Length: 286
Ligand code: NAD
Image (cartoon, rainbow, N blue to C red):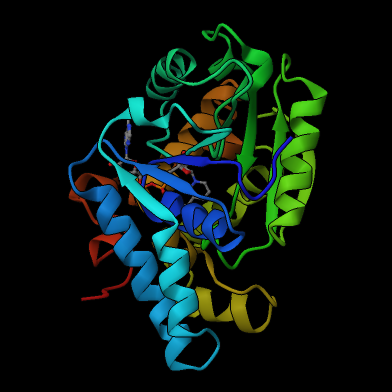
């Protein structure tokens, strides 16, 4: 369904969108990058260039290769410019109504054969597709943070997703050097379902005064064998995003107390302390 000439659209140039644009450009695709916030798409592309510059300094990439990769990412100023895309990957705010609205517009702009993919962490792909004319063309393509480094991609089929669409996204992800896995559209899919208690129990230990955040992170990393503990990982993910994901899984399981969102995390969200991206979360990055 896709080859390296296929134009890949990415919507949302934040933490995930910029990384996904890099992955697609690295694989040789022309990439169109759109963000609703003015200047954000260009900032996303500049962020990719800055990150790759470190690889040049370490001798892992040539300056010419970086230049060519970055030149394949074109920031665009309107959604209408997504028309030539064979695949559009959405990585915007984790809200059902906003995602439905963006995909509804894309159906009018792009061709009938364009595959629409959502990077949602937790929202039902079936529900996002329910307001579309062609829900069979919608699929979950769930990357992990940081997208250029993490291998896993969950390929999520909603109730109406066509199997050949899911299979094409699976093959494309594999051709991008990723390790895809097929999953159905259950709340939180695989990783974000399993990870909910990982964050929640860490937050509870801290709230109960059982140990401080840095100690919990260190123990999980050093004894547990995890790459990161719950506090440093949610700081990386972004508390606005992580809290929205927990709230969505909690609601989807009829307020099952196992998925109860954390009040200490809500306070961080209320304060705008989203983690690394805002300079402060559980830890200070300024
Ligand atoms: P982010 O806040 O870093 O970036 C989101 C970007 O989308 C922002 O630049 C914002 O301006 C833009 N945006 C918001 N509404 C828009 C709209 N209607 N049209 C165009 N642009 C819009 O968020 P993120 O962490 O990149 O998360 C994006 C999506 O990816 C969410 O669905 C999230 O659940 C999912 N996700 C996040 C992570 C993570 O670790 N952060 C991992 C996997 C998946």
